[in-house]
Image (tube, rainbow, N blue to C red):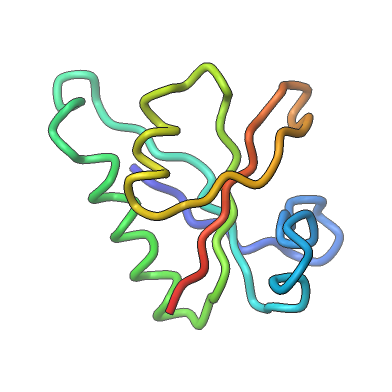
Length: 107
Protein backbone atom coordinates (compact mmCIF):
# COMPACT_ATOMS: atom_id res chain seq x y z
CA UNK A 1 0.00 0.00 0.00
CA UNK A 2 1.24 3.48 -0.85
CA UNK A 3 -0.62 6.72 -0.12
CA UNK A 4 -0.59 9.85 -2.27
CA UNK A 5 -1.89 12.76 -0.22
CA UNK A 6 -2.80 16.08 -1.80
CA UNK A 7 -2.75 18.67 1.00
CA UNK A 8 -5.77 20.88 1.49
CA UNK A 9 -5.41 24.57 2.35
CA UNK A 10 -4.64 25.02 6.01
CA UNK A 11 -4.35 21.35 6.97
CA UNK A 12 -0.67 21.77 7.83
CA UNK A 13 0.42 18.92 5.57
CA UNK A 14 1.88 20.93 2.67
CA UNK A 15 5.60 20.19 2.82
CA UNK A 16 6.48 21.94 -0.46
CA UNK A 17 7.07 25.30 1.24
CA UNK A 18 9.87 23.68 3.25
CA UNK A 19 11.79 22.83 0.08
CA UNK A 20 12.13 26.49 -1.01
CA UNK A 21 14.59 27.64 -3.64
CA UNK A 22 13.65 26.92 -7.23
CA UNK A 23 10.82 24.64 -6.08
CA UNK A 24 9.12 27.21 -3.87
CA UNK A 25 6.34 28.24 -6.26
CA UNK A 26 5.69 24.91 -7.94
CA UNK A 27 2.11 23.79 -7.65
CA UNK A 28 0.49 21.47 -7.32
CA UNK A 29 2.49 19.34 -4.96
CA UNK A 30 1.59 16.29 -2.91
CA UNK A 31 3.00 14.03 -0.27
CA UNK A 32 4.13 10.46 -0.60
CA UNK A 33 2.69 9.69 2.82
CA UNK A 34 3.35 6.07 3.54
CA UNK A 35 4.31 2.84 1.90
CA UNK A 36 3.76 -0.50 3.58
CA UNK A 37 4.73 -3.92 2.30
CA UNK A 38 3.67 -7.11 4.06
CA UNK A 39 6.71 -8.66 5.78
CA UNK A 40 6.39 -11.79 3.62
CA UNK A 41 7.07 -9.67 0.49
CA UNK A 42 9.81 -7.35 1.75
CA UNK A 43 13.13 -7.37 -0.07
CA UNK A 44 11.50 -8.05 -3.44
CA UNK A 45 11.33 -4.46 -4.75
CA UNK A 46 7.67 -3.85 -3.87
CA UNK A 47 8.30 -0.56 -2.04
CA UNK A 48 10.11 0.89 -5.06
CA UNK A 49 7.45 -0.41 -7.45
CA UNK A 50 4.64 1.05 -5.33
CA UNK A 51 6.50 4.37 -5.16
CA UNK A 52 6.77 4.45 -8.94
CA UNK A 53 3.08 3.63 -9.31
CA UNK A 54 2.25 6.43 -6.88
CA UNK A 55 4.40 8.82 -8.94
CA UNK A 56 2.58 7.81 -12.14
CA UNK A 57 -0.74 8.61 -10.47
CA UNK A 58 0.64 11.96 -9.30
CA UNK A 59 1.75 12.84 -12.85
CA UNK A 60 -1.73 11.97 -14.17
CA UNK A 61 -3.13 14.44 -11.63
CA UNK A 62 -0.74 17.17 -12.78
CA UNK A 63 1.45 17.07 -9.67
CA UNK A 64 5.01 18.27 -10.24
CA UNK A 65 6.59 17.91 -6.80
CA UNK A 66 6.36 15.05 -4.32
CA UNK A 67 7.53 15.38 -0.73
CA UNK A 68 7.98 12.64 1.82
CA UNK A 69 9.17 12.34 5.39
CA UNK A 70 10.84 9.26 6.81
CA UNK A 71 12.25 8.29 10.17
CA UNK A 72 16.04 8.60 10.23
CA UNK A 73 16.03 5.09 11.73
CA UNK A 74 14.13 3.55 8.80
CA UNK A 75 17.14 2.71 6.64
CA UNK A 76 15.18 0.51 4.23
CA UNK A 77 12.72 3.29 3.37
CA UNK A 78 15.54 5.83 3.02
CA UNK A 79 17.37 3.52 0.60
CA UNK A 80 14.19 2.93 -1.39
CA UNK A 81 13.34 6.65 -1.64
CA UNK A 82 16.87 7.41 -2.80
CA UNK A 83 16.80 4.48 -5.24
CA UNK A 84 13.76 5.95 -7.03
CA UNK A 85 15.27 9.43 -7.18
CA UNK A 86 14.23 11.32 -4.07
CA UNK A 87 16.69 13.87 -2.69
CA UNK A 88 17.32 14.53 0.98
CA UNK A 89 16.46 18.10 1.97
CA UNK A 90 16.59 18.48 5.75
CA UNK A 91 15.73 17.01 9.12
CA UNK A 92 12.67 18.34 10.93
CA UNK A 93 10.19 17.56 13.66
CA UNK A 94 6.90 16.16 12.33
CA UNK A 95 4.17 14.27 14.15
CA UNK A 96 6.25 14.75 17.33
CA UNK A 97 9.18 12.79 15.89
CA UNK A 98 12.43 13.56 14.09
CA UNK A 99 11.92 13.00 10.35
CA UNK A 100 14.05 13.38 7.22
CA UNK A 101 12.40 15.41 4.46
CA UNK A 102 12.87 14.10 0.92
CA UNK A 103 11.54 15.47 -2.36
CA UNK A 104 11.36 14.62 -6.05
CA UNK A 105 10.46 16.63 -9.13
CA UNK A 106 8.18 14.78 -11.54
CA UNK A 107 8.19 15.25 -15.30
